[in-house]
Image (cartoon, rainbow over all chains, first blue to last red; front, side, top):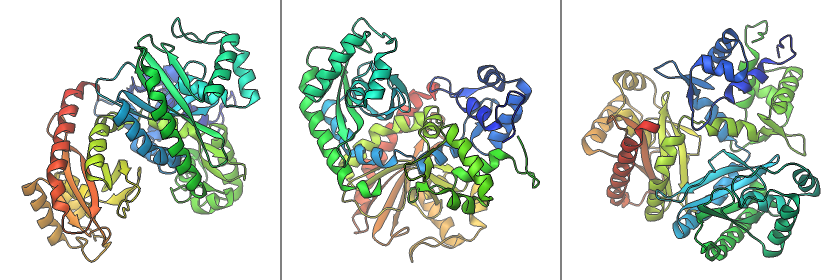
Length: 253
Length: 253
């Protein structure tokens, strides 16, 4: 690929442009894209025009630019997590029907939990997660599950770094995190009242694949009213069902 | 962007590479990618390496290449259809719970219906649609709804071309298509028994936005047993609820 004087390829710059968009700001003018991506306006305009030509971006009636349908299609049609998500969907629906509020599925990507799916009731408690959104592993219940069953390298890396604090309750020291991980492995679930937001409790359980490896965290977010633990059995049952489905269909994954 | 002797940009070639992957073949060796994308193996290798570097592709343990998590994340985080899909999800869940089989949401993209979401029961009837999959407008119930309420240009374009036939029942002549569109507008729904597959019936209704424009088709796929029409009222009710939600939240869309 063509490289600038700094050695950066045009593909790298295209990705920086795609990275400017968020759920809060799905449409942006080219001038804002240029600033955020750290590109000259002329360079950004040219790249945006090319991305629009390929359908990876689309221009609205107001000339603002957004992610294009073709981008979503290319990413979703053969998504690496499509089979996991499709296998999980009936269990997420059941969880959501029984528990209400939010039912979600997260996987580990790097040192964060990446949410593949979230079902939300209209009057549900506050929740910071989003589909295709990320949160640090130590903060959320599903992240803590993925960390507790993760490999040594991952655990050491997370334990050796400063831990971001979201509320008074967030686990923010290595000592507390070590204890919490041990407790998750002993109990088989993570229950974190008020760790991401004062008003919400996250509860997560591990989902295992055919080989018994933990591949995802299944979680619900409910009000922080001291009654969250009542949801542990239904979560555990759903995770077992999903793990069994994954084991059965592992040839297709 | 850099262009080859043929004037094609590296971004265009990168998109051709991303386009090689399908739900049936989510992982491919570089040699197959090169052949499908019409590129020299050396060129394909270099582009694949760069796409892997950016996280848009990922390499498996067997060196086969697949769509990367980062690609899915960039596309989904600010997806142009995220709000429509999120608004539709509770209604799709209810439909799926009541009707069983498949409940799905499709939008028009070009002259095809693109399926944004599909909820499927384990023992459901055969269904050719897929999430992020496409089918021609005239073949499927949701496509026919989007066509019947589409603009003149679209209708003329589709009517003037050969119409692909999937089964004996598929609408394959302009005259029949014209009649079918008029019937959809008169009835307010499309019911197509055996048009995509002998054993399945698709039933779809229009979803309108705040301005009353038809923006999506909400559909269920059920067995072709002569009893499909019983699902029309629940579909119509779900589409009304979804349209009302869209009107209420149109400021955020």
